[in-house]
Image (cartoon, rainbow, N blue to C red; front, side, top):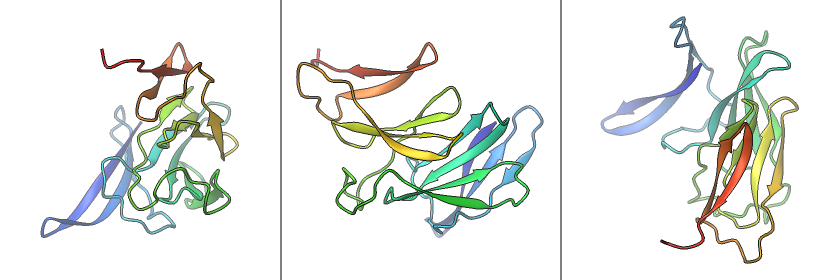
Length: 171
């Protein structure tokens, strides 16, 4: 399964986007309904990801609204065929560690197909979501002997686990 963003343009300006989930084996394609936030997904680095919950055999599309206060979830094959909105990890306006106007969510690191982890431009934590319980939370970075600098660390999946890497020097 692959999640694809299809842009609709008008005179070189993106005026809308469609999200599609494609099964590369069967060549079936499902165009998702517009998300409740009514956003225009125009950037390559937008906050949407496809995950799989092996406990229920369900694929879910997770979309983070730009402010990070709510997440929208679409379950493929669900009878109501609709998006649901769930709270994000931030409760107060001062909590997001980023400038809402300029921040771009990066593609998440997906572990076990069902746990998503997003970098949030901070040296303290990342935002994570287990699509089984559909709850977003902050996952704190490991403690090091020095202060972690943002943009010098990242995450990868290694051996089926989330792994943290840190660039100690430029060489």
